[in-house]
Picture (cartoon, one colour):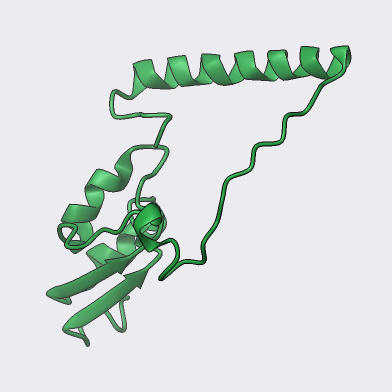
Length: 119
C-alpha cells in the first residue's frame, strides 16, 4: 500500500471480513481511495469486530440472506442432520471438550462485551 495506496480512486476489498484483523486493517487505512467496496459472504466475525468495517470501508449498502439466494444465485440445498451415537469414552471426551468451550465463551464474554459466540 505504500507504493499503490494513493494511485486509485476506487478500491474493492474481496473477503472484506478480514479487514478488522490486525494484519489486514493496514490495507484499508493506508489506501487513500475515497470510493470503497467490500465484498464478503461471511461478514460476521467471532470477535465481533465486523462493526469496524463501516469505519474502514463504509456502511453496508446491500445484503442478501443465504435463503434468498438459494435456487437462483446459489444452488438449492438442504440441511440433513445425521445423528451419531458415541461410545462411553467418546461421550466423556465430548463432554470434557464441550465444558472447555462453555468456559471459554463465559470468560471471553466477561472480557469483551462485544463478543457474541453466535456470530
